[in-house]
Image 1 (cartoon, rainbow, N blue to C red):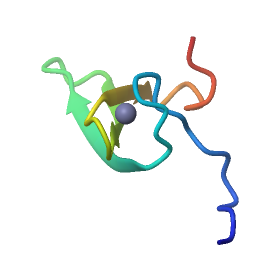
Image 2 (cartoon, rainbow, N blue to C red):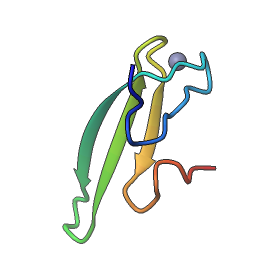
Image 3 (cartoon, protein in one colour):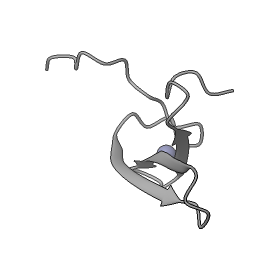
Image 4 (cartoon, protein in one colour):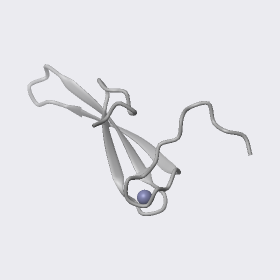
Length: 61
Ligand SMILES: [Zn+2]
């Protein structure tokens, strides 16, 4: 099996590395800002990781 070009994300709960990626965008009701959010849903335990657009998904702490 070949490795994907992007580094693997690991689930903090089950250690799984397969995620379902979903993107959501929330526009504020004031129309000033919009937050784009990436959700990574673990395929094993369904744990949801939230990532905001302004951070790298690997820069979360
Ligand atoms: Zn998991």
